[in-house]
Amino acid sequence: MKYRHWSGWIILLTVLEGIVGCSRAGQDRKGRNLGVYEAFMREMEDSLTKDPAGIYNRLDSALASAPDSMSYYRNMLLKAKALFYYGLAQVSMELRNFDRCDYYFNLAERSFDQMRPYEKHVYLNNRGNSYYFRQDYPTALGYFRRSLALTRKYPDMEFERNLTMINMGEVFLLMNQTDSSAYYLSRCYDFFRRVNNQTALYYIDTQLIELALKQKNLPLARMRLKNAVKPDYVEPNMVNVRNRYLQHFYEESGDFRKAYHYLQENKRIDDSIRSERVKMRAAEIALKYRQDSTLMQKEISIQQKENQLLHLHQWLYGLVGCILLLGTAALALYLYRRRKIDKERWKLQTAITSLRLENIRNRISPHFIFNVLNREVSERKENPDNTNLMGLIKLMRRNLELTDSLAVTLADELDFVHTYVSLEQKSLGEEFRFEVSTGDVDLNVVRVPSMLLQIPVENAIKHALRLKEGKRRLWIRVMQEGERVVATVCDNGGGYRRQSVNRGTGTEMKVITQTIQLLNSYNRQSIVMTISNVPVEDGETGCEVRFTIPLHYSYRLTK
Image (tube, rainbow, N blue to C red; front, side, top):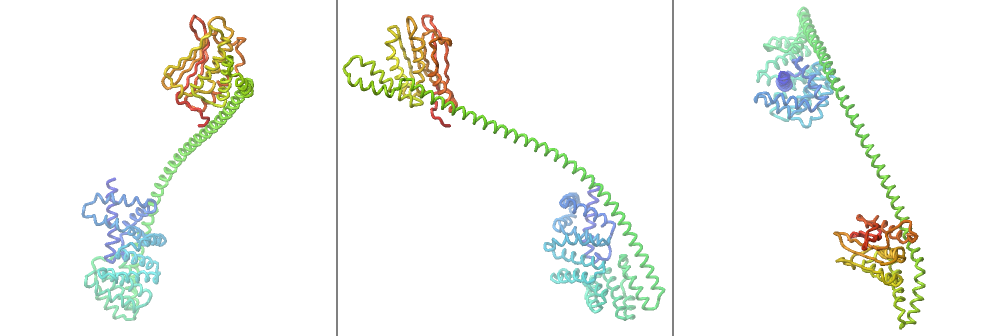
């Protein structure tokens, strides 16, 4: 892994020097280490097309382990993203894959406005070179003209400006525009002689020899050949161009043997370059095969992960669907039960109303009787027998008032009970005793359902005490236990017996029971009613009706 990081670093430096440094030396178009660029191109192409962001992380990681002296390249990498694209385009051009070359140049062109002046020159110069190799000289000349116009704006780009003029001089020469070619070649010759750039001077001499031949000036061509510079090393591409023009020179001179010699030399160089390109193409195919295999493995792995994710999504969708289904079912059940409860509540309220009306009717049309008795009492004001009659009238009046109210204070309920018992006391005899104890309960604050105590008292007198022999006792006890009030009605009439002939129809107790059920459905805390047989004094058994009422009980039939 360490070797791979350093090899990637070395490749990056080599390519950057090739794209930047060699371009500055005027060698972009004339020579290249194709083996290094081939490996670089495949690595860059794979990263830029499949993982554009990953290449920067990977190369930056490699550069981080480099010496401090190499920080220049990292800065250049971060500032010139388009450099990679036209670097790949340059490699594709060397491999004569012009479709891919145009593809990468087009990608680089998207960042043209953000490029620095020198980067714009590199792009335009290399793009023109790609059309030069395709022998599309007018298009190549258009890019070189743009490069020249750019470099003229910046005085410090003198090298780039003269390099562009070499390219333009050669293109004009190939287009047989000798005057334009002579103009540009002569203008850049003095600069490269002043800076002593042997490679550039060698190439300019080559163009000047061909220019003299096209001008039909053989002596000038011979003189330029004689005075041409002779560098220690010349790129094969430049030698190829020189040999082609020398072949032309000796053909014009009539020395066909030397012309044939240079023809053979060019053929040998062409064969060598062609062989190298074939090897690189084979290496490219082999590398692409390995990359495609790796990519296929990655795609299979990704597909497996996607299948696992899809399976997980199916489970999640199923779970969510089940939850929604259960939620819908629970909501439907809740609404059904709510509707059923409301229906039962309505029936219960209707039944209570009917029982109350029935209870009123069973009390012998109190409105009519109350009016008659009230008239008779008024006519006999001084009669001592009027006491019971007045009590009866009071009872009937209170009965009418209580029948219209769902709840009354405990004081009003006990007053009604006292009035009723006083009327019944004569029929119960002298051995009847009625006792009421209320403790410290505030009777004017505590509210109870109307007739809550009167009905159990009436039942006790009618069904238990009236036919009893001996002592007859009736107790009402009211006490507070925490947040509740407990009220009990108890007698000594022998207890509750289901099969007793005196038990009555139970209609009045149904009114109490259903009233409590209705009110409890609107409250969190409930009124509790219990009926039980309890031992009383003298070893007798009595029936006790017990009510437990919350202090903050609501009597509003709304929630």
